[in-house]
Length: 246
Image 1 (cartoon, helix red, strand yellow):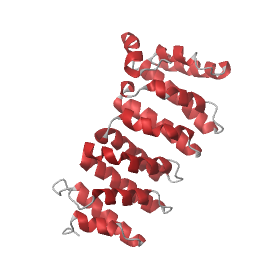
Image 2: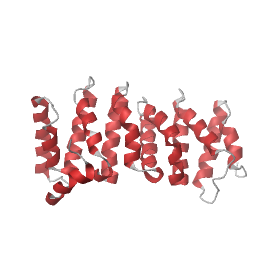
Image 3: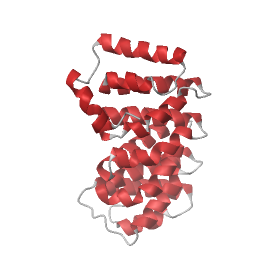
Image 4: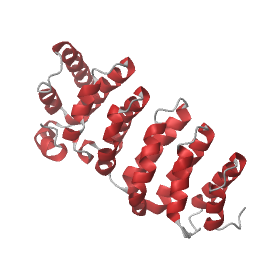
């Protein structure tokens, strides 16, 4: 309803009936998309807690609604949402392992919004690190995909890669072949942005030579293809900007 205040919608969000939640989601999304509507309510914490609960729902449609509402809320709140990242991020990470592609995509969208405008890529990725060892293989894969997307959107210099590359290297030996392949692709993407510094540092990580040869071959393929983004004179400044070295 057009006349509902944000407090009215928050009360509807708290209802347990599934159909009521769907209606509350529609009302909230319409409200948040109207930039002229004020973000004033009695307890914003209550709203965010409830939406995080929706994300955890076993009903994927409710989970999707929660993710969509939180994404819009981050857009409206900007940096003010930073204090709520600890509430919104963990359920979003769990949903990266959802069987529904639409839910996984919306989880990725929310995480990207948490990086900007709510916080920074480094701030969020420090809290994403547990995802590399998540019990769900799809979550591990999606965190790698999230890393690639982050590098492409914000640049390799937005992250302290020295804290992340060791986790990628561990996933080169993951029990799941899809995760292993994605880990290799992630290293290739980092190489595409960073250059030969990556090749040198990987040689110090204790990666089996057979696997390292595969990775190096992929590096060479990218280099020959002309898809490298890094410039020759950027290699020296990379270790300082991205802290890739051990």
